[in-house]
Image (tube, rainbow, N blue to C red; front, side, top):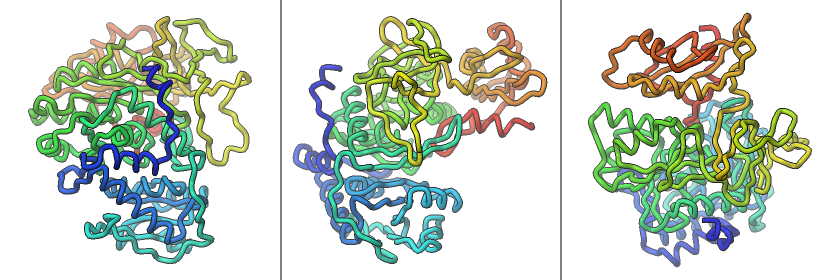
Length: 514
């Protein structure tokens, strides 16, 4: 694996590898929608991206342009994004974003062009009109070489004709803010390609792969895990406008996807939906799955294999770094809590609160060195690095003597209950051992006497008959000391944020006064 990465030079701009794919893979399938009614080959993707670049350049969009894209996810949207990322800096915004959210991002990044739907009524249109920004409406047009019709409203001020390079920003990604305030990270073409190429190599993707992408393109993992690694290596990507079980079932029966990358929450939802409806994909469908974006429940791998016969790969990374830090391939065996082998060029140090390195096996804060760290927009001085030049993550974990990284939770998610510091993930694992509990999420809420109290949300399995008190008593045999939650709340699904991730910070605020 490392030998391959050492030989591979991940120095291709987006336009270069899209064009290379046209020559190498030609008429092999590249992009589908969930029904299969939209289908493009690698050659057609290259032709469409090239046509879109010409049209966007004619509108004055270029290297110095910052563009907000607010479109429903689908194969045509991905070609628009590829074209714009190859020539300008792109901020993806979800079509349902609130006006004030959109306005803050437009102001923060000095957006000069907004790409949105035809005949829009969205926040994107309202902000563009209010600010006098060029709005380009996109409408599907199969007769056009670009596959879409572009209708500009207003012209771009100070048009740029310069060619974008590897060190120019391709993407601006707003982090999820799962444990703190959201930030905007600048992803260069070089950083994007390193992430995409590394993930593709580690997972051995190739022309035989056909993957479903259900992740929103406002989320970096949609690019560097769920779509571009497969597309770049000659496979095909089925782009969905989010997760819907009916679409998943139909797609699996007609297009027969071999793999999917999603957050553990989405994979848990897929399992629950399949179980509730008594449906299973046929052999060979969804045989390779990849979980990314949040902590991986230890039961997830076993349940996926039992239900689908599927193999699960994992990785550890974050929007701020490139490439990913640690990974497990879908063929590898891994221990509970492990996220993977540390990936070249990263080195991982585990440090205490004072920055001193801890020995192997000791739990502490994860500090990184050796790889590429993306810039944060508006950061006047760098506070994410320690005096040794290491990038300080917000995660706690440890490394074993085989070089496997284990995650012990977020540093700022540790629950301080009466002076005792408790890892919510450990409590979750204890609750999920109960045969009636499908999923558990644990977090702290403020308490005037103890500092924090513990709340657990639990999703019950289909057919569960035992009471919450029975489940509490069962968990009490495994949870020691102060770790027993004061409240167990049964919920139909675990709440997630817009990126499909569980935010304990949001849940703590939601249940603080409940």
